[in-house]
Length: 385
Ligand code: GLA
Picture (cartoon, rainbow, N blue to C red):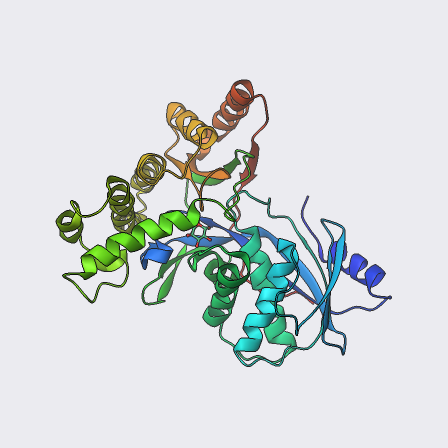
């Protein structure tokens, strides 16, 4: 079921004494290729999806944020002047964004907010970035912040770092802010430059298969992966002081430090260097409409994420194996990892057979259902009414 403005407005009216505010939306995202490259200064290739967060917001003339989560039926009030803020993660996102906006000099005042989402949580589709980006966009608009979209994306990222404890990169919030219907985006996370790539592949469909293993980055080994990468950069820095991230390290640099770093860190870095190359290879292939090469690279990414970066799990590995067995062009685990969705590039004529097989096999093996999500590339954060 698709979330509508009215789903949110009717709740806002009910909870905030018959008033109405302004309604905003921000999307979740997919990522065709380029995983765990963002915090390494590499390339990513995301696109916004139709699913997202809708939030209605109205200033209330106090210093309080009065927030209602429609999905969780949870209401909480907290002050903009609090140091620590609320404990529940969904409210911390709102608190963190408001605080980070204030750091940038935006004169945020108290507000009422009701919000709901249709991005499946823990699916690797960035439901949290959708919420952060929706609130950042809304506060910027409501309190005349005049802040550009990339800085708003960084507000969401800083919220993850400073209020949630996930040392994420910029991909998710970037995609939520900059998404454009029927376009993917290649972002260079080192320079911040990006380019839109129209995405309407002839003869292929993108489909997500949600393993329904909830991926949770808070408290997960996500931050440890980042630390592995940073240790490798520190070793390279000894002879190449200008190296800031793995993006600045070559394959030769990596070989030079191989003996000084752990075998695990070496494998992590090897994956990242390969992944940066794969994004560029995919862009070249897309220019030639060569979707088979795109798919091959996706499988390579999955193998790297599974064996070298070790962020897959039994269920997502199995989903990719089924795709391979069915002859699907490309498949891989998507997002931070540890569960969530696989993204599949499927030939249109194979689609019905693949979906049937994947549902039946998954059910048989794990005794539970996986969920099919057809990808529709949508717009980024915006005002709805
Ligand atoms: C999560 C993070 C992103 C990115 C991906 C992996 O979604 O939020 O910044 O690192 O994992 O590519």
